Amino acid sequence: MAIFSVFVVNKAGGLIYQLDSYAPRAEAEKTFSYPLDLLLKLHDDRVLVAFGQRDGIRGIKFVVLADPRQAGIDSLLRKIYEIYSDFALKNPFYSLEMPIRCELFDQNLKLALEVAEKAGTFGPGS
Image 1 (tube, rainbow, N blue to C red):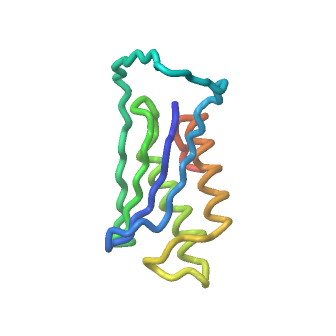
Image 2 (tube, helix red, strand yellow):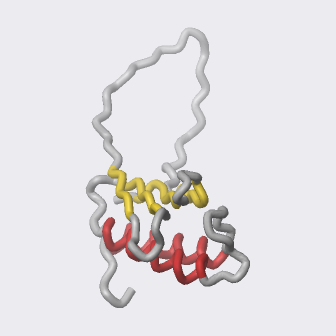
């Protein structure tokens, strides 16, 4: 399972935080010569887009792009909200509606994404 990206959007619709957490597997470098022999294949890959908006903060939206088979997206959105309120809103240097630039927020969000990808869900004590 994979969680590809996390976005936080303010009430004006501006992107205030973006994290791309999915790193594709490294492949060997390919070189091409002219003419190119291309073979196009159709892929039925889909991405699940989950939106979260908490009642405590009107207008802030959390968006998670994930594999449709990823379990526990609702729990992950709650955890992201908890991390946002703990490390961004309680930061005295952070202004609402401004981009989030907080190292503790980054670290805890990356840790939460790792836990979500490995476990699939969050328990009540996480």
